[in-house]
Amino acid sequence: MALNPKKNEMPTQKPEVRAHNFNEVALGYTVELAHKEAARCLDCRHRPCVTGCPVNVNIPDFITKIKEEDYEGAYAVITETSSLPAVCGRVCPQETQCESKCTMGIKFEPVAIGRLERFVADMHNSHDGAKAEPPAPNGHRVAIVGSGPSGLTCAGDLAKKGYAVTVFEALHTAGGVLVYGIPEFRLPKSIVAKEVETLKALGVDIETNVVIGKTLTIDELFEMGFEAVFVGSGAGLPNFMNIPGESLKGVYSANEFLTRSNLMKAYLEDPVTPIMKGGSVAVVGGGNVAMDAARTALRLGAEHVYIVYRRSMDELPARREEVEHAIEEGVDFRLLNNPVEILGYNDPEDPRDPKNGFVTGMRCIRMELGEPDAKGRRRPVPIEGSEFEIPVDTVIIAIGTSPNPLIKNTTAGLEVNSHGGIIVNEAGLTSRENVYAGGDAVTGAATVISAMGAGKLAAKSIDEALMGK
Image (cartoon, rainbow, N blue to C red; front, side):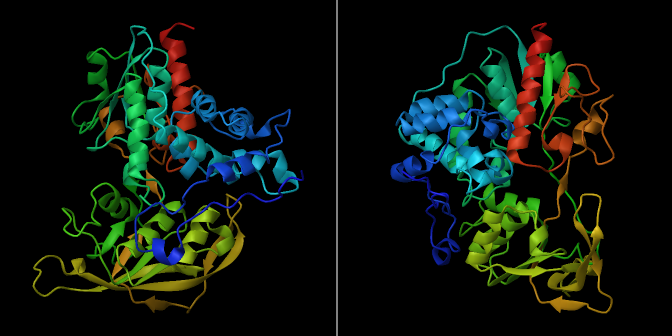
């Protein structure tokens, strides 16, 4: 039978329906679709897709198990190297990683590896598959700072080797960026909770509402008997443009906006935390976080949502699928435009600084693309005299985040780079003995799977150090 040159389409909610609810957009493969897609895998000898995966999932083997209708076997293959299969199947940029190496992709569309991984994880979860059990303890204790993807991965890999692992999370719910940053319609929180419960079943202890650097310091963790510490605290410090008007009411960082919606449930009728519920919204930025913020604003009742980005569609860093979904849902892309000022008016009944009034609009300038910058992208150049205004009630700044300086400022001898990222060697070891780090705390904002890869590397290094290998 001839191979299908194209991926089997992922069923989704219709755009006009999903733009008004927080249910998951992608509905997942049926058994029939999964088998059709698995049949496209060539099971080639060199297996280049595995090298494209930051955690080296044995992709051809788990796809073979799907072909054999052994879904628990497929799940077992994936979880040999990945602690978060249901998460990765949903949010990893497979198109630039494993799928970019797929042999089928040389002439045709690559195998939909991410969709198949999600299918396997969802089958396991829906059938309440075999529970993980803690291995025999090896007598060593490790502390993990942060319960995001790098921390959870490091914790899971160490727990499987018998370590007593405690994860310290600053917020009231475990999951890090998976729960506060990624919206429900892309990653249901029940999925994250299920993955966390799997780690707990392995023996991982998770302590929430503990801010390392405030509640406890890293030095105090060692005094408590932990022999190694992994810092996976992420990059939760939002960047701003430093333009006039950023202190106006109605200006959010994307980090705050998404946290209010995702973790604090500001979308409820009577929320405990306020958030915009209508009007026009401008989201500044072109990455996945900008798409998440724009699509969340739509679901919260915004009448019009703009993406304002200083480069063209070809340079948008967001995943193509997320961009397409945003366009289908009605987000208005204002490309080759850059904000220069956020406009507002002062509330006469508010005695505070008159600069802290309410947003009424945003002044932008049109851009054109010039010579490539250091990253190879054409540099945006302002067009003189091209300024114009967009009337908006809310502005969301989504131009990136940096590592929070709290741990650096409370840990003597911990070296960081000029961007605040913790400096590590090739083993993930910092300048402090037995202190390791990885994920966004090192690199700045990056992908879930790259953070997982860093957590995996650190777990291996910690094991080698503490076991004297």
